[in-house]
Image 1 (cartoon, rainbow, N blue to C red):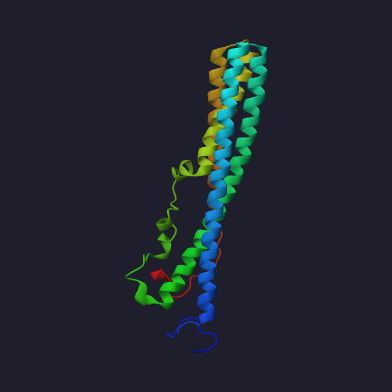
Image 2 (cartoon, rainbow, N blue to C red):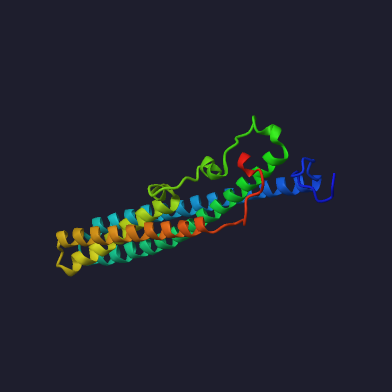
Length: 222
């Protein structure tokens, strides 16, 4: 066994190389779990804040009726929740991109396993390089953006922003419900479109970024 062999010449890889690769695999898997946990916790806190805020808004409407106090409280509350939504959207999108990078590196390591131990192929999932991420549930497509945690947060944030804009428009138009609904719908749709385009642009930049300059020989079995 040569000192620099990694299994490409038909010999067994060095024990140190196997240790490094398996350790890296488990480390990346733990990092993926951490990013998923953070995204879930942030989304949960955001949805919890929205729920509590809407309950408080309902209590104000019951106690003060639809008057000045309700309008002021509603504008401040919805604006604050919208800001929290934008921040949460950006962070969970970052976490999703980090998770994608970890998954790509794990898929790369699987190619090493199949290259060095091809006899394991019948017992482990073997997919071509183009499907390594899809088999982990990371598919592409326009609708996929709405299935992510960032997409869910983006939809709720767009509704909150549209509601805040609609409330302001209703106040400016002298308690006009029509003006509030029209303004809220337009602003909400615009915000949702902007957030989805921002998310799509971020993923497009990641897909063009190559973590590795080339594919290792024999990686098609990974």
